[in-house]
Image (tube, rainbow, N blue to C red; front, side, top):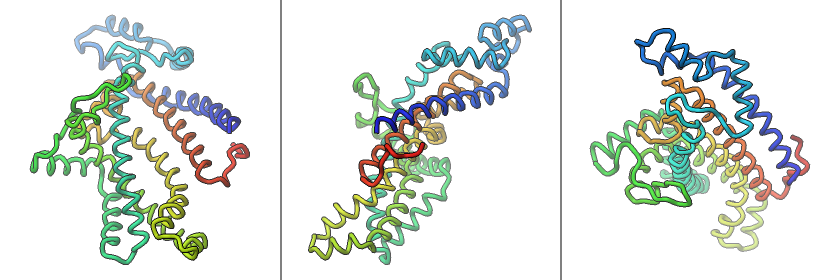
Length: 325
């Protein structure tokens, strides 16, 4: 296990190096930040002075070399807009995005697995067919359109939930979390459900497919032949085996929820990392964009590693030490 983890960490360094080069080159080619930051009435001397102060007067390779040198010491650059370390700006917004992603995945898991189990165990009932039809709708509807509908229905028409912003937060070990406050939770419900809809549909369909496949296998028939109760057969034998692929998918989807919460955060004005990076792209704040993508890639890698470890714990046939990586 230790050897496998060390190999994965070595791969992480290579992935981050390649990602940083691609992202830096792509951001370098998109516009001139000086045009966004300097007063349009400024003369060329002032523009050149600003470009020198931001380090944009050097060739791209020199800029990238300086970025790598500073990144090795934990410095991902200084934000052009905020005038602060880019990583500090992102870390400030990270709790908002993480709590939204965790709440969205909790909704997906809490609803998706039971609904998928029912649809798999009783596929011919009207409710099962309605569940599967609803999952298709969840796959098909665009996130931004669903978000607008949720705002119109629950915030404008019914007035049950707030439509935008993040509510009051509670300090937990230095992290400001709003979902632990009732008013903050009310603010988070709409964007979390909007973010969870696609993942909920995915978990429902995957759970149903796994149930339909496993109920026909010999180990389920043997468990029933031993006289075990239906609850034990489903809760101990069936659920444990279908959780193996589910854990993999859920782990990967958690990473995608964190990375692609941009649309939801923009619609609901949620002050997370996604909204920050959108604003930074429009403002050509290169350090923030590069730092965001680097942090997101690192989070993906860590989540994948945790998923692989959990997979080995759930399935004893998996031997990570012998994995070819």
